[in-house]
Length: 406
Image (cartoon, rainbow, N blue to C red; front, side, top):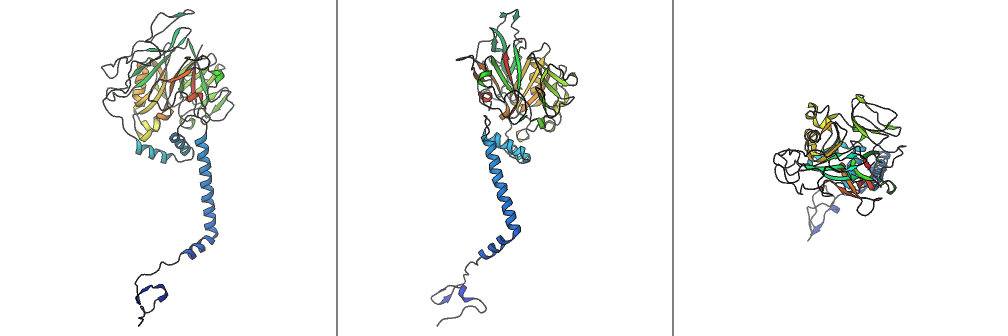
């Protein structure tokens, strides 16, 4: 005899076995509710907007990832996010991935380089110019390693050493990290400012965002520029065109028609004249009148740039000028603003400014005519810098400086 199921229930929704009802309900149908939801105009509008947003995001991101240049995927995605108001997310990701530099240890490479040539010597002469070799730098880490602080010739002009470089550990605690220090003789070299295709961006700069084959003869060195213009606290000027605004009081690297440069404070001994062809401003001085101002130790993140993970010890770069006009460039990992300034000061700078920070934007390359003087081979000064040596033989995303023989 067939027994009835519980009263008041739809028996068709029950399955039976051996004539007995099961207490297992079939899943209710929800497709009707979904169809009704999709018929609403508001739903269709929202879905259309989401679709447009996703398509735009994919297109915009693909544009950023396929722009010519040597920037890696991570730096391109980060720059895209910052340019589209997603900076806080990038900062959070960087903070989670940041690792503080370790204490102690030894460098991963010998400090007896950069091994392009033998140590610099006095006595070279050309057109009454005598090589001006800077004095050896005393080690900040107390006991110097072999080669530390000893200048080696990185580039010569007509046989006269013009660019010198050495390696230095930045402090006595983080002894496995090494900074590169460069000294350039303005009597023998000239400087040229180049724009980047993204920063300062498009403009009638009359200078390409790369070093094309026709402009490589006599090339001796290149180094990175400063922050994105919107974050630099100043402006960028080149051949009559300005991005941002040249701000009085800003630390400034000024380029002149004769190929020389000056470093100082805009509006205090430096200003616009008919001889100025370029100006690159970035924050405030980190060496002024031969001393490091106390401001380098205050509000590091807000005053001196957002770093990876909010750490104080990160890749940094800076440029300075000595009392007799030599140009000093310093860059490396595990640097604070203070240790960067100390290295610039130790190398003889009386005025200096911070340039860019964080690993993806750091670079110093020297160029050697091993096979062709018209197409010299680039070599990284620091073997652990993120950017490849051919960075500026490709289109650059940010501004940079090229150094040529006079």
